[in-house]
Length: 215
Image (cartoon, rainbow, N blue to C red; front, top):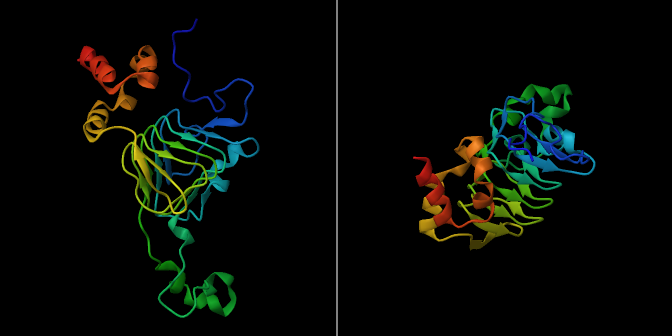
């Protein structure tokens, strides 16, 4: 039996399953930051996440995803580059078509932006979830299959639908505060490995006792 944690730099961590990729070693775009052990599962296009699943990403906005997140097939991030003007009669992006229209480039360079898109640690996204520009999804959140996330999601909330709405909280407010304070995802990976069962299936109180024993 091995006593070591999996290698976070391994592209395909699950033996015989090329559909599962760890995203941190896959991503080259400096505008995308992804934490260790966050994975994407796709039977056909797993290694194309950067181009197929992060759309209209021309900068300067960033996509930041934390550690230990699970992204199911079709999880898509729409970035601010998808925006069109809405302050005139037409929303059509004339200048990008070239010709004489290109003289009006300012019409497509000064577009509204909601800033960076940020996903916390330990977030689970179901299949075909779409995250809109500038959304912040809290630590420990769950986004149900097919959801379109148009607004921020609180820590440890469960949301779903189009647009996604709050379904329930996974823990009480006091427990959420405790979990954010414990921040198990920042523990040394040896500690995570040693106490994996408590992290995966224990209570908040049990996790707090592990943290207390470390101090």
